[in-house]
Image 1: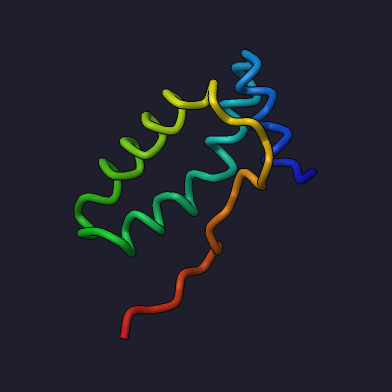
Image 2: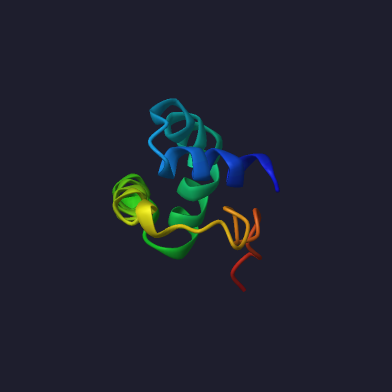
Length: 78
């Protein structure tokens, strides 16, 4: 099991520091993906909404798969 998945499982179980570390370690990738998929001017808001939704549903995370299911570097738009 990778480090991010362990952090997310600990966060699910109430470890606030694990949640903070998870966000800190994934924030740049989430922001870049939001910038890529949406309007670059809205990337901050989209990233915040992404974390709000993810944290709100954290109690359902079972750890069946990795915590980082998307590629780190999406292909450039043509």
